[in-house]
Image (cartoon, rainbow, N blue to C red; front, side, top):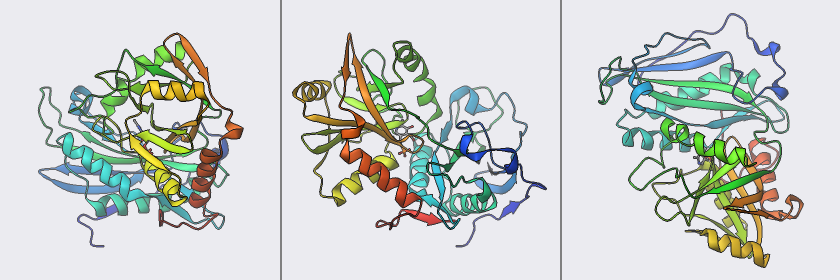
Length: 354
Ligand SMILES: Cc1ncc(COP(=O)(O)O)c(C=O)c1O
């Protein structure tokens, strides 16, 4: 592949990896030795460097901070038994990042910069990829507007950065979720389908209220009627009803999750009936009372498969079937883990060795 710009590499003099127990690091707080930083100036990507992880000066006036021109990705690298490190479907992340970049009037990140930068970075920091059963290296690519100017306008300058952190399980236990019908996450014509920083900021207050009621996450509903499910926290949501896998259809208010896509692909591969369509609160509550709803789970890169064991709605709480009886999501979780860890064949070529 011909690089549009060369990537300059400044390796650390001494790795910090031995200072950490990679199987017990808190999520997102311990950063690996290196980071990638690329700069967009004068209408082009000009400079790309892999540097020791460090703070760098940035003005308090940058437009990402004031006007929210900031998008990000979340992906993971895994280590197999022979020590080979591979990425899970990285081109899907690039595609989503660039779809977001267009919507946010930001420059797209070229494939060669993204892929080569990412692979070089992970190769350099492969010691940081935990080899534990549930371990992975969480990868955070992000794109921010860096014009030093107050005033709402499209920035002329940007930085594309990749940080990485070793990670274990995101949710240690199954979770309870609160069906949110006062606040909403996204509206048609908005940026719900983009991993825009502002989507997460706006979700924090409703999530705090749900937490105060004893729930781990919010289950978002549509902004117009609050009767149809959208997604939950940083996960897409799936239901198994009458033996069918049912999930809200994608729209401009829902993030096109790569885990969602992969779970649906596996289900279809196993000849399980799959429906991507509107899913109403009423349908789910009825299925709970009839006993036909057998599984509910969230899926996402950080959380992988997060079992949902209870749902709160208005004044009621619905306890769901025990996790031990959930054959589909348990099999999907195991299969994804084994494909990622090289413990079984990768039938769809999802893994890319770095
Ligand atoms: C809002 C939201 N929905 C769904 C997902 C799941 O997407 P993915 O499976 O690509 O991680 C995420 C995480 O990225 C998210 O932030």
